[in-house]
Image 1 (cartoon, one colour):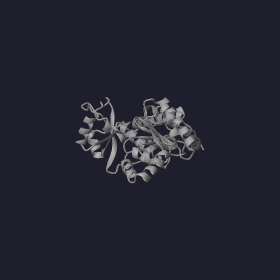
Image 2 (cartoon, helix red, strand yellow; image 1 turned 45 degrees about the vertical axis):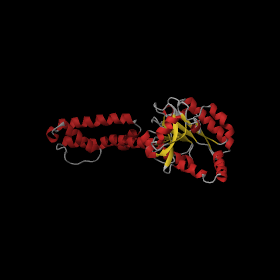
Image 3 (cartoon, helix red, strand yellow; image 1 turned 90 degrees about the horizontal axis):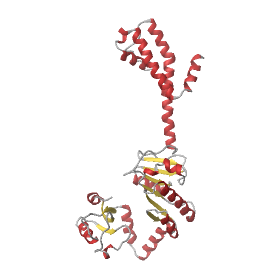
Image 4 (tube, one colour; image 1 turned 60 degrees about the vertical axis):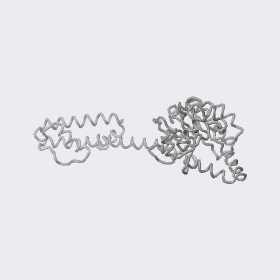
Length: 331
């Protein structure tokens, strides 16, 4: 009964208290044992080693007390030491399990920096996340009960994405980009309203973040521009336009699909170079490297504006292979 009451009391002690008690117990017993039988152990360190192997029930048997007093102390170690140190080990295991459980439930604070935050989980967002994980850490914000999958660079935050507390746990102020995909399970008007609310919350939390949002209805574009999102993707509208384009101009959509899947050639962005005074200079220089300029990020008619001056610190959208993109320093 005394043993059971002792174990019950140990189970209610805090981990820090158990840690201090374990250290005091191990080094204290080692000191007493070495004082009792210095010839048996030879050094204080060996006495500490014997105490540790005893309280963790390993007991190699390479050292053992030879006197009755030492054996009585060993019995004391068996009764109380194993309970104290075992309680500490149990607390440590419980702590690790608690942290793991909180991580799976999305309750932990994200510590990463330079990451991408994705809002909303679906089959489409899973594909986006899996692609992003090749290059950066990704934080998913949703209200799922558990994280949808496990990956060393994937982190899950559970909560309302429009709340400041949720964005803080996602470490939004240190993120480099945010991707908000539309919720296709609700009407388009409501989906755009939800996306707009999330985008405005992101803008307040981190005005410098690069925000990409999916918009369901084109008439809401002005509202999204007012919250200063960087890029707007048209959801169902884009699919409808692709269908119309395919019907009038067969084969055109295959080109677009190839560009999006990066099968061979793909689209990349590269910074402008100081030696390029006009777009004509950029066209000639990049053509020699097997690169085709598509846009300056806003317009597609650069071939009619070849003699215009290239803005300082601008970027160009180009078409080339991934190998060439790496060679020319694509972003």
